Every structure is written in C-alpha cells, then in structure tokens.
Length: 211
Ligand code: ADP
Ligand code: TYD
Image (cartoon, rainbow, N blue to C red; front, side):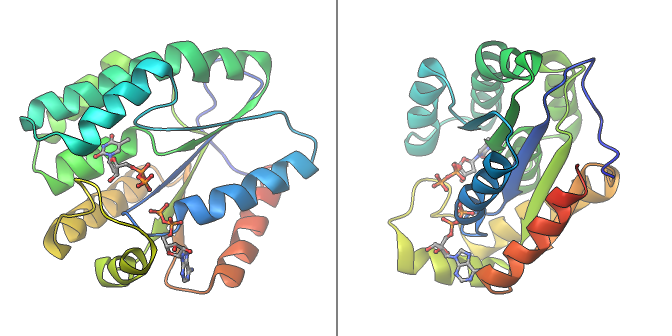
C-alpha cells in the first residue's frame, strides 16, 4: 500500500511524473492513464508548466525566453498556483485522480539543482503556494543524461531547457534523487535505462499497490 501524503480529505489521488528531459515521462503517462481508466477511475491529465490557459502562456515564455533565474522560479510557481486553484484541487475534491506531467519537484530539480537557486527559497515558495498539498505518488524516471540526450536527438528539436549540457542534467538528476530520498513514502524511482516493456511492468506493479 502506498503510504502517500493524502491532502486533507480529498477522495481523489494525485500522481506526478518526473525526470530529466528525455527520460520517458510522456511515453509512460499514456500507459498509466489507460491502466487507470480500465480500473474505472475518473482522470484529469495535465502538465506543468501549463495546465490552464494562463499557465500555457507562461509555459511558452518559460520554454523559449531568456530570463533572470528568480523570475523563472517565480513564474513556474505562479503558473502552479493557477494550476492548483483552477484544476488540481477542484478535481481532487470531486474525487477524480490527477495525473500531472511534472510538479514542484521539477522546480527543485531544474531551478534549484540545475541552475543553482537556493533551495531554501524554493521551500518558501512551496510552503506559500501549496502548504497542504503534495502528490500521493511520484514516479521518478531515472536515466543518465547521455541516454536521455541520445533518445531526444532522435525524437524532437530542443527547447530552452533541452539545449542545456550534460552537466546541467546531472545536477537536475542529482536533486531529483535527493528529493526521492527525502520523501521516500511518495517517490518511486524507476530505472528508465531499461526497455519500455520492462518499465511498463514495474509501473503496473506500483499502480497495483495503490488499490
Ligand atoms: P520525456 O517526456 O521524459 O521528455 P519521452 O517520453 O518524450 O521523454 O521520450 C523521449 C524519446 O525517447 C521518445 O522518442 C521515446 O519514444 C523514447 N523512449 C522513451 N522511453 C524509452 C525507453 N525506455 N527505451 C527507448 N526509448 C525510449
Ligand atoms: P516538459 O513538459 O517535460 O517538456 P516536454 O513537453 O518538451 O517533454 O517540461 C518542460 C520543461 O520545463 C522541462 O525542460 C523542465 C522545465 N521545468 C522547470 O524547469 N521547472 C519546473 O518547475 C517545471 C514544472 C518544468
């Protein structure tokens, strides 16, 4: 049984997908949503930055424009505040399950680990923007930047973050793994260097634990 941090008395569950760019989140979100729908759950599938009309505008700026690091972190959390208020909390209150492609762990990993923003500032933003909400379950797709990069090169043209070098992604990966150690109840680290089929089997077992 997953011993997640269940927010308040929400009857829905909140599942997040994390990992460096190219780790395989998008590939496996579809699989998980199919699995949960088969089990009869009502789902809301969303992403960060984004998930609302305003959030998608902020996403466009965040992924393509150069900006000061603190501005970047604040905009990530501004988009998140809107996302929580407009999408995540209403869905959880209804009893829906929310599947989000990234959440606050990504800010710790990218703006904190990757870019070097003081983690205490990040903790203050987290405490301000969602003091009582945490995912019930976080899948961390863990893979080396070299493997992720080679997969991405074959798949798509890079955005602002995806153009960063292996050093950057090593720091991002390290901060993700540190968060996973800090919150072992909700994190499940998946070795994403394996085949898609093998990863699916692992995910199926982990989702089974939530019943
Ligand atoms: P992310 O959403 O984490 O950035 P994607 O799911 O878009 O990553 O995967 C990036 C690319 O790698 C895609 O072309 C995808 O088909 C491929 N891919 C994903 N997982 C694997 C895997 N386990 N083995 C080989 N290729 C993979
Ligand atoms: P993602 O949706 O994974 O990109 P794609 O659709 O290309 O797979 O994430 C967009 C980028 O935003 C990704 O490089 C990570 C970055 N990001 C942050 O830097 N901080 C954050 O808080 C979030 C949510 C994302």
